[in-house]
Amino acid sequence: QQQQQQQQTIMKILVPIKRVIDYAIKIRVDPTKGPHGVQTKNVKMSMNPFCEIAIEEAIRLKETLVKSTKKKDAAEVVAVSIGPKQCSETIRTALAMGADRGIHVDTR
Image (cartoon, one colour):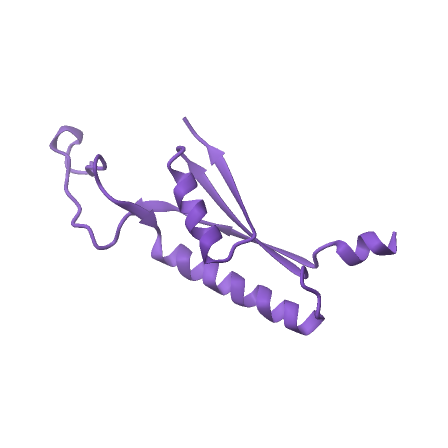
């Protein structure tokens, strides 16, 4: 039982991430959807810049916890995204930034 306690992570950091239109792209209004509709076809999508900051902070927090406890797996960063299958690209970006796991809740 002591081995199980030693192997458990002390903290799991859950970071919700969102897929949005890239901030460098000029947004176009879709006239068929009215004045509030945004054209999303053939538009580059990326992770929300604020979500990128949240991932970076979660990784910093994890590194601080690892240093203070001297346990490699003291913390785990989990990125979560809810949306269509294209959201998996955003999760891959979070994993490339240093997140340990990614969870995708698929909506259809």
